[in-house]
Length: 182
Image 1 (cartoon, rainbow, N blue to C red):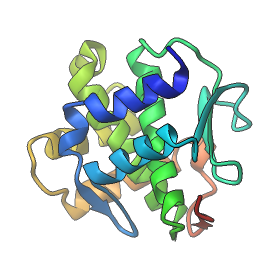
Image 2 (cartoon, rainbow, N blue to C red):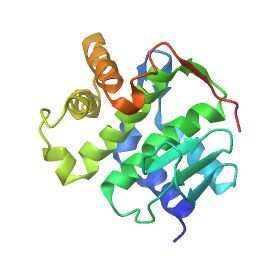
Image 3 (spheres, rainbow, N blue to C red):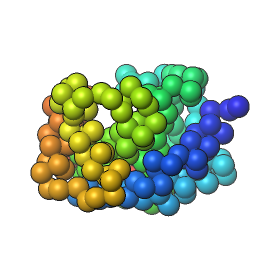
Image 4 (cartoon, rainbow, N blue to C red):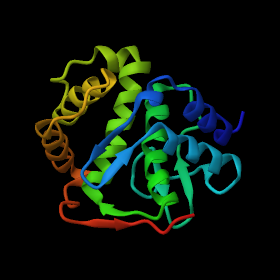
């Protein structure tokens, strides 16, 4: 099965993502937004390809090319599936040509990723909040969302701080991203 088909199935069939509905500042997530990404992949408006992400990670969304790039072809690993979901959140923002805070954009993508992981990976479900600061903040917030409860201002602040303490994202405070649409 192609990477694109696997991502489409992931977005359409994940029980956890059907309940991912929340707002973080200037960014938000709804199940419908992820379904629209699946439709765009089906219609070849967004590509999913194997390659080397320029961000040094295992996956990234390139909004200038409307393309998710991943170095992995093993979509069966929950961690890779989580990364695909993370990048599909960025794709959803790009589809609608939003301009938003980079920190809110990443917060929304990470939260959606961890909602999925807490629901679909025994390793991540059992991982304690103390595993590391970023995962702890995200897991606490994701567990709140999984209960269909709104996030508190304190939880959002904890998520934002933890992301800013991560070297890859330490310079995004105050920056904005202007997605250009598909």
